[in-house]
Length: 362
Image 1: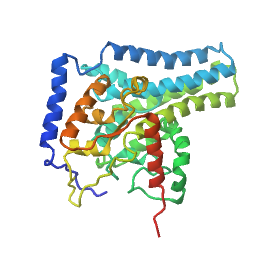
Image 2: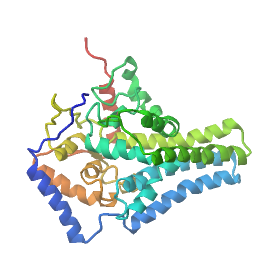
Image 3: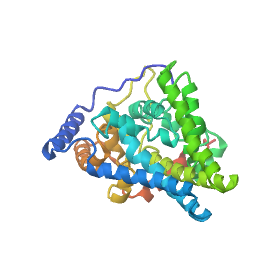
Image 4: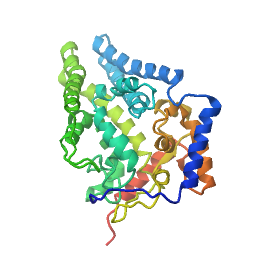
C-alpha cells in the first residue's frame, strides 16, 4: 500500500446516504428513544461483569475442586468475551453513554482483560471503521501472518490448511493481546495510514500499569493463594483465555471475512470507487438477526452493517435500524450482505478462508 492519502468518492450515493440517515433519525424522533444505553443495557453490563469476576472470585476462594475451578475458568472466558462485546465495545465507540467519563470508564473493560483500549480505538475505531477491508490499511486483516484474511496478504503453502487451524489460532487472541500485540503496536513507527505515530506519555504509562495489574490478578494472585501446581494453573489460565479468544475471533471475523463481502483498494492516486457508506455496505455482513440470545450476548455485533453505519449509536438499536437500512438498500439496489444463522455465517467464513488459502494456479 502506498503512502497516498485515501479519499472516498462523493458520487453515486447521495440518495442512499440522505434516506438512510433521515429515516434512522426519524426512528429516534418517533420513538423518543435515546441513542445511548437503556436500563436493559445497564442490566446486561452488570450481569456480564458479575459472571466474569464472580467466576474469578469463586476460583480464588479455593472452595471448589479442580474440576469445578476448570469449569469456572471456562465461564470466566465466556464472560470476558462478553465484556468486550457488551460493555467495552459500545463504550469505546462513545455509544454507551452521552457522558464521556462513563464511556471512558467502561472502556477500561478492555484494559482489565489485558487489551489496551487506547490502541484499540486507533486500530479499530479509526482505521478499521474508516478503511474497512482495504488491504494494506485495515489492521483487522493482518491479525496474524499464519491466517490469510485478504487476497493481497502474503501467501504461504501452509495457508492451504488455514480453514482447519483457524480456530486454534483465534484461541490465542487474548493471550497475544496481553503479552505481545499492544507492545508491538506501540513500537510501530507507522500504524495503518498514520505515519511516525507518537503516543502520549500518559497512554504509555497506562499500557504498562494495566498490563502489570492484569498479570498480578490473573497469574500472580492465583499462584500465591491457591493450593495448585503451576501446570494446573496453566490449564485454567489457558482455558479462560482460549475460550474468550475463540469467541471474540470468530464473531469479529464473521463481519468481514465471509463470502459476499468485498476487498476494495484505491487507485494509484488514492481514490476509492465508492462513497464511504456504500463502501461499508459492500465490505460488511450481518448474521443471525433473529437469534435474540446471540444478539444479547454479542452486543449486537451480528448487526455489523448497522454498527458500521452508526458506530456511535448503542447496539440495542441495531435490530430496529437493520429494518430501515435493508429497506433503503433494496430501494437503491445496494447489496445487504446477510447470513440467516450463525452456523451458515461460520461455514461461509471457513469457505472464504479455504478460498484465500488456495495456491495460485500454475
